[in-house]
Amino acid sequence: MSPIRPINIHTKNEVLNLAEGSYYVNILGGWSIFSNGFSIKLLSEITKDQVDIKRAKWPVQDFDFGKRSKRYYEFVIKKKGNYILEFVNPTKLKVRGSNVAIFPPFSFFNKEKPNNELSITIVKKNG
Image (cartoon, rainbow, N blue to C red; front, top):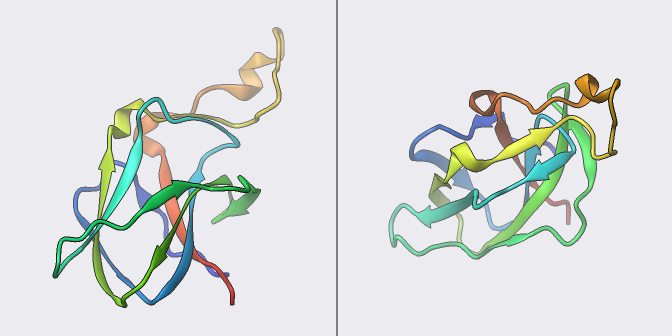
């Protein structure tokens, strides 16, 4: 599985060429994710049909592009083509480095990542 380059969550109308198959969406920046109404939409560029995107069944923690990442969404592309990626409520997404509760005086190790620096990657499942 090789992730597509990072895409900043404040990017507008990113067009992705996707093959048929199953995909994961990883959120970069940390392992503690608070969506607070943040979501993504994928629309077929031709038909404008919306792809059904669901929360990942297995929110695997990993590293993508040298940053902590967490599998957060998954979806299936049934027909190869160009898809428009839209971010819903990007300013609401909150990410912290660790998902372990850290108490003072060590909480400065688990600060919230700046929202304008948050990105996603899209990873095609093998098989």
